Structures are given as structure tokens and as C-alpha cells.
Length: 249
Image 1: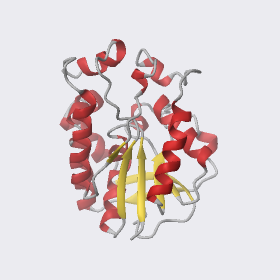
Image 2: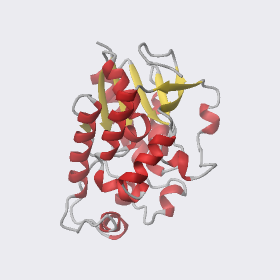
Image 3: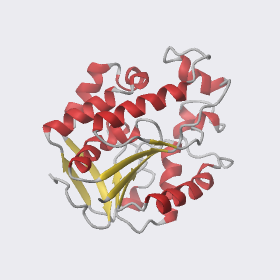
């Protein structure tokens, strides 16, 4: 059974951007593992990190990341894939980024994440022996996504990579930031067409991230409208051979 690893910066990125493809691979006989890299709980959050949960109605006593890890497990179940893997690295608000604009203004020179990711990715590749990786293109320019792209491209994996377009950053602006536009320009674009069941699985998985739906989409109706507008399609740049079993548009 071939193995696909989806490397997600945050607890929702893979489901939002390629959840239907993950469901399709699983239906096609692949072992699919959704790995989220920035999931560490941080005791006594303060400043911007605390504000990121207060603005979602979650008090300082709530372990925000534990709640999000539970959401991620529910999302994986909705997609029909195996239990997700959670790596205990810290999100940007816990690494010195002090406001929402800073998350999209370029990486701090003292941000160690790319270096921290390198051994983690190498271990995941060694232990998981994947036949396929799925990872973000960094559309939108969020520093956590950018650092993952840097670390993974430096690793130069031998297996094929489906580089997904980071949703919902792709629809927030008519011309979103694409810091790796030149990096991916030479790779072919492929579009995966989702069946009704796969589209429904993606909708259910995205809806499982209840702490994020209001912030990201204005509520469940907004989420449904945004997903419907994607037309049961997911878009990638492909490095390597087309994986077996995908239904291309």
C-alpha cells in the first residue's frame, strides 16, 4: 500500500487546501497521513498569542492547541484517513511575531523554525518512507507556510510532491502574495476533480475546525459558500510523476 504524507503547517491547512484529494487517495487504496507541524501547547500564553484565542471566545485558561488537535482528529476521521500526527513545534505567535500584519511581512531573522523543521522533516521521511508528499506553496505569505516551503525544498525529497495552493489565502485577495512564484513556475499545474462523496468529506472535515470557522469564513454558511465556489476542484503544482489513482480535471 503506497503512503502519502500531507505536511500541514497549522491544524486545518491540509484539510482546507487538499482535503478532497486526501479523501480520494484514501479511497484509492493509499495510506494517507496528515502531519501537522506546529501544534505545541504553550502554557500561560500572553500578548498576541493570547489575543489569538481571546478573539475566538476562548479564555486564557483554555488549552487552545489541545482543542485544535481534537478538531484535527475529527477532520481526519471525516476524510476517512488514519489518525493525524501532531509535531510539537510552536506557531508564529509563540516565536516572537507580535501582530497579525507581522505574520505576512516576512520572516524574522531570529526565527529558528526552518532550522527546527529540517530534522523533523528528515525523520518523517525516514520513518514514513512516503511515496507522495503534499505540502503548501506558501500562497498568502504566512511566515509559517513560508518556513515550511523553505525547509522542504532544502530537503529535496526524492518522491513526488503535490504542492497545494493555500486556501483560503487564495480567495482573500485577487492577487495574493506568492513568495515562491518563481520556485514553482517551472512545475506543471494539475487539478484534481472531486467526486460528490469526496467533496462532502472535505466539507465535513473543514467544518470540524469549529474554532476557526468564524474567524476564517464568518461562520458555517460562509465556509460552505467558499468551498462550493471551488467547484469540486483542488489545484497543485506537481514535482515528479502523477500519483496513481487521482482523477484529474
